[in-house]
Image 1 (cartoon, each protein chain N blue to C red):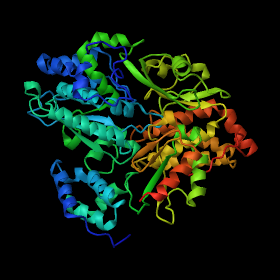
Image 2 (spheres, each protein chain N blue to C red):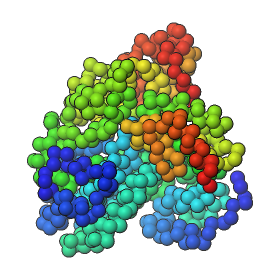
Image 3 (cartoon, chains in turn orange, purple):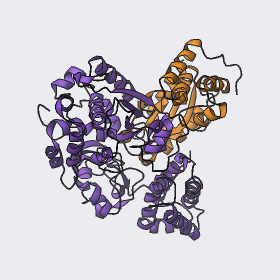
Image 4 (tube, chains in turn green, red):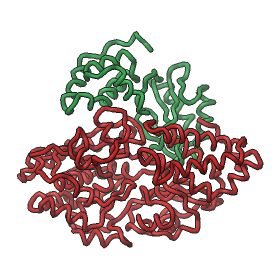
Length: 163
Length: 435
């Protein structure tokens, strides 16, 4: 785990305390607070997790139990962009396996890994609720449907150029 | 509603125009139900109306909505903390109806929540939204802010003395959070494992307070029931259930999609008329009628009416009403392996049979699909289907749901299982690199 992460900005600490104050117990703000951290830093480092745990009055391990429970909370660094390719049943039927293989070949990584230039992390994800346009994927916050190899090639080119 | 639609849930949804704002929503008949309810109907009258409408939960379990509410203690909202929670953690593979409802008309959900909250006298509303639904999240926040600004949310709505507001909880992705007690556990900032019942959420739910958890589609029906009456709503259904249903089809059909139709519409009509039948070169082999956790039906069952009782008689469940089609060029064992991979991954890990049994099932299916399976593996799969399947010896309904496609698949595709084992390979020869 990186120890070089800067501490949470004061404004974020204030925001987390405000979220906690709205809950009958501060721990109710756990997921929301972790999401705030990840939105800013891309992932949740152990140092940041400890800061959040202290703000919520939880033990580090208690909060880490939550951080490691959810699919969308990252406890390891990810690239500048995250491609989440659906691996659930409708997308599987509609050909997500060849698409995943194509992505892995093109990017030179396996699912769960990040490219050497730190541009793209590839992750499998469960059903994105876009089954009428399968195969589907989430790229950062944007949903894509009817994905094919040409669309993937175009996307990778764009993502590599986007900071 | 000013013009009573036979497709009330989707009448105001126009993907090209985006969701209606408060004024457009009101012009199209919105807020009428809230005026009616808060202007003179008692909470008991609304519960009675919804019971008579024959509305059943649209999240998959199909419990009567009015009945569910009837177990909530009756104190006024001002005297006791109670919660009304919209379950928008839509994560059942093959299901995309709640996303369309929220993105298309978020105010309809807001109004449905106001009515449900008034009926059970809950002052606190929460939308438990899955983390992947970014557009739905933005539109919902916008709709809630506008409704609040115009006085539809907040203290003393319409001068009725009833106060209610809505908070959006963006989750972070776990299928089990759709199970209502796991959802409550997640909201309390804990690992989202289900709870034993009793106490039921209606008496001891979120933070110990009485809580009702209703599916998005269920809630979206309420404005129409309250505005147009229970009898009108009950009459929309073709069989014993009331209302319309958002049905959907995915897989190799000509026009995958979702359509609002009378509940009880025959499956054949949904697939052939609305989804346009199979794509050229593909035959329908079997299907899951209502998401990943429902049992396979084969082509002989296509005339089943898509309501709760009829699908159950046919050997499956209506579930979410969103069908997934298996075509004749897709390997059924590969499909079941994909389903069980999902269920194994999404097991919360709380109880041993589910935590250890589902990965075992996945490994057995891996072996069979990869050509290294044995006849005894089929016995082991069958044993899991019996021991984990409904009614289940597990803590919650996750493993029984996982066993529904497996148990039915073992029967329906017995010859395919045998072929894989005998020939030591998958005859479909698909590129199925695992992820």
